[in-house]
Length: 426
Image (tube, rainbow, N blue to C red; front, top):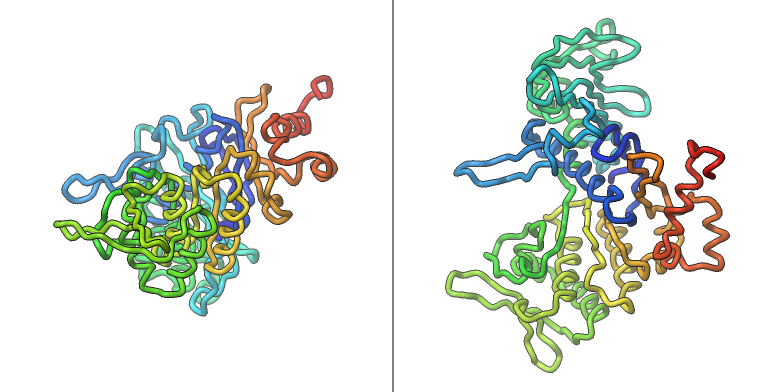
């Protein structure tokens, strides 16, 4: 899981701290900064994929000129807050606990310089550590390390073991995050390489889904078990899920709960090229293919297919993940997502503008719900937990959270409780 993320001079955030739960809903007005939070997670995903900084911020093309990665919106010119020369992150992650990776949590920090005398973006500070201190650090306060500058960065390892007297120093390229370079270096300590691989695995497992019914309706080749960001390959992903009777029955049960259709089975049509298209088989025998199914049904199918498939990811960022779901079924959607998060050990982060959905949040979901907002007196985006707004518990005794969101009360409460707000304005 992602535990906490600190954004430093990134996009519209001057400085913001985000705490994530197993299910985290993000609300806020248009242009408040929700998409910039998504970009921050996409940057970390690019780090996990091992890309150089220039490709994470820009684009990456593979063999044959095929686009493999769309860069961060605005590129290097607009990635830093108000044209700042650098930006950074500090991230707390909880990797899977296995014998070869014993760390309960790891803290990773990165700072990127954008305008280094005409050079491409480069790392100027990077660290990986635990509660006991750093595993490696480019700028350890207790043991300063001179840097060469330019295209190189050095990191010092924590003293101990074979490096009890003099901490080991390693040299890396500065145009690519050090974190992604460690696993390929067999001369580095095994425990350090495993810790780096753990964090990279968490970042690699982040998926970004902005489901589009037109993309979902397209047939796909059997064996394509990774759902595309817009819902591509849904038919083949469902085909793979249906091989497990338990997962298939789970999917059918939720589909019947969230739609008025009495679906009892899935069928798969095959075209002349061998691609398959899913069809929903109702109790009456009627078959409805993805070509004619409703947008809401398709979006829900793609959402649950992503969560149930073990091959797609462990952390999901959904844009408007309740889009297309009828208000009377929203409580079932929340129940489903919470159940899947618990049973499949996945994490869901979703944006929403839907007041009805907010009105259905239970105590735990409300605790992790986030408000992204901007004040009139400052240009930067802020992030607050809704549960920490002043008087929120008392207000919710008589008011519905969805109504508070619809009337702008949440933003007003956040603005007037800003600690730097002048007394005359508060």
